Image 1 (cartoon, rainbow, N blue to C red):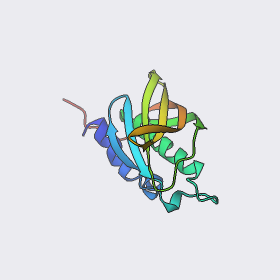
Image 2 (cartoon, rainbow, N blue to C red; image 1 turned 135 degrees about the vertical axis):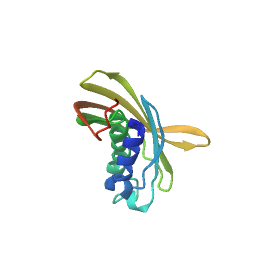
Image 3 (tube, rainbow, N blue to C red; image 1 turned 135 degrees about the horizontal axis):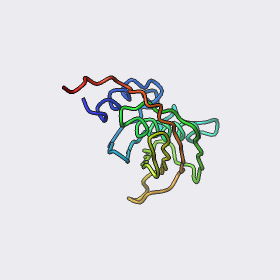
Image 4 (cartoon, rainbow, N blue to C red; image 1 turned 60 degrees about the vertical axis):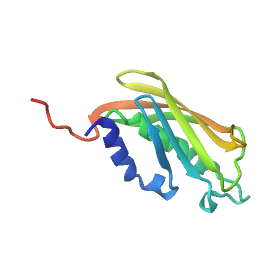
Length: 144
């Protein structure tokens, strides 16, 4: 089992992401794409998608890309900026990429958007930094 399979397997067990029906669309070494539908369960008291639901999608993407090398990683910092309020019922997409990394620290940038008339409408951006613990998520058999 490769490290991408391990993180995909772990993501299937993510109860919080499952509650929001977040879907992992694509995962590469330094990139991730995911989406969710902004259904009635994501709406706030003004019947608009809640900022916490938007953040949940970005954070799920951070978790997946940050743990895609079978090294348990934990968040050090996340900063999200909201640029627009998406409409209820739309698909909300996130694309994330690593912008810098070392053996211990990784920094990532996430763009959240909807599609309107075939064009991306920017909803939010998030910058996140993590610490790589050095511990494997799943022990792999030693090669002999």
